[in-house]
Amino acid sequence: KAAFINFISDEEWKSIEPVSSWFGPSSFLMSSMSALFKLSMWIRHGHGYLTENLGIPVWGSYAVFGLATLFLGMVLGLVSEILGAD
Image 1: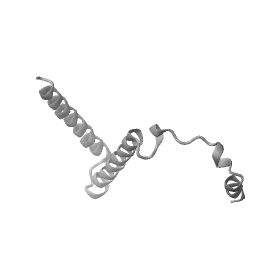
Image 2: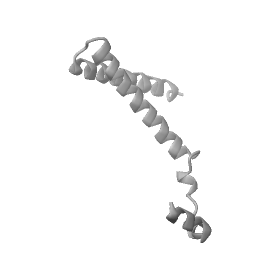
Image 3: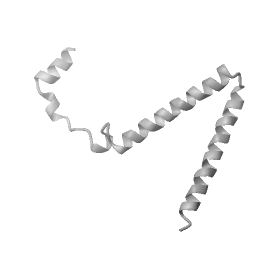
Image 4: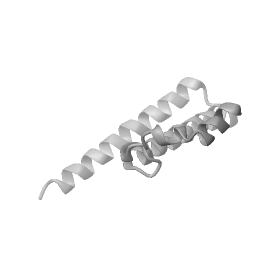
């Protein structure tokens, strides 16, 4: 607590450079990282639901997410091919 008070009263905060705009909370980079974190938490919650509530074995949950990843990749590839066919 004393170190923080000294930091403020001695105006040591003036010597610290501000955070780069790339790493600011509202930057594209940090927003993307936040979205990836939320996705990982959603996947974790989904894995827990599949294994605990539905009784699917752990390997079955991995298979479900693996197949979902493959299917999503195929759909995105198809959309990319359709949009790029101009």
